[in-house]
Image (cartoon, rainbow, N blue to C red):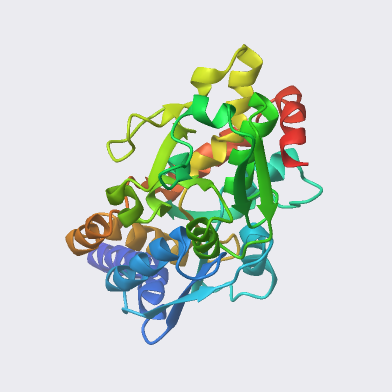
Length: 338
């Protein structure tokens, strides 16, 4: 009888183990033969699009079942359209994620009436790199330093719209420091802005340093003169002085922390919160594994696209902290968005 009981316990243990692993096994099989979509909140050929397309070439190798990975561009409202898509009509089975402008996270705090989203209610997959943002002048007669900009009659910049990262950067220069910044809105994406810069319609741009065309940097056509992150990574020149250097009060410094907070999750990939947990886990692991993939890293290095990754859990922590900003500081940030 004791032997029968022992066998019963063994069988029960085996069945328990099988039932515990069954969901993961099912999830591993799920992606076989499927198409996995990465939705970009901007038009093709810009910085976000480049990151998405490079990720798309390699992440499928790290997803069990090796699904086909495609990139879809969904520009609109400074990439807000692509974020809303996740919870509206996108499949919520783990086959869709999006990359968007992380400035929307800050805007959702400062202007909840315009960005009626809680970014804690999305599943964060990971971040390829924080957004090391700068402002630069273009051409031999372009702005080359903070003092140079402040003595210009106008420093004309373009943007997709209010709330986008480059709009906030430019508005910060104008509203906090009274720089002679004029902003022209309505560009579909950075590719169109770059063309306008080359044609002389714009004087430069504010945005991710990695989005500046490498040939502009090599030729000296782009002059980065101010940066928005305390940290200066090696690829950013010393000429890009930290903007906090020019702050004249503690309130200004705190306000800069809020306005630039979204940059910490600078190239973010998110999914709907309704995606099953086991599939989210698979995609998170695939993302993390891609960030260590030698072939991916070699390609990014070749294109001079920095990789300083954060896991989904790390990104969620940053977003949770940012969403807990004191109301008094939030109130000071509102004029920048208006």
